[in-house]
Length: 332
Image (tube, rainbow, N blue to C red):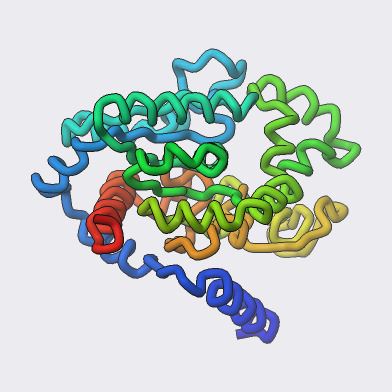
């Protein structure tokens, strides 16, 4: 192994040890459950039906759901709808009621309001909510629970998938793109129903400020609600996100065999990523976590090339792991 690769591995290991001093690495358990490829047991199905289950999409959801007219660009004929497979498995195969929450890439407050309503409905029925959130959806969920602490007790469990808790530089790049791309970016962003406020919302300065100011409340959430995070690292040579992976990792676009073929677009800090989220940005301090390699930002939820994980088994694994955390002695 090259010296710089050994150093990078040491730094990453040190980061995980210090950031997660009180957290459990659930990666091995996650992979064990995944490779068993077992259906939900009747008991697991009965337990899941006791909860209101909501799947929260992330940014660009309007462009990835066929029935959503808010984006004038739609990719769902290729990718299938956001959470398509998850809803099909839960609703049709297991007859477990689950819904995909309507979210907004234009105004995160709309997403927060829908989260509040979902919890209010569950509370009125004497039930709790299980949330599976992705990307921007996880940020909206975290903020809503932190800034409205009274609703925490009505949440049964959370799986945060690939959320940029500490921000992503791609938000800032979209706000201030290189000169040669500024006109193209200015035209496409509104067509996707994405606002510059949302891009600012996911930028590192805004996210890091929120995380710093709310450390104690986030720790309280982790103590009170069974949850875990899932982080991904994509192989840039087998991902449609390759250009973005290169930018986050080295600050530029790279050729097939050579180094940078463009000017430096992003000055760092650099990191491995899933193509949208820097690896170290996707952790909550003291929260249990899963690290998956060869997973880009859309693979677990959408129909994209180079898939290394089957979405059906990813789905059952996420919920089975959540059920284990919910039923653990720490969560009576």
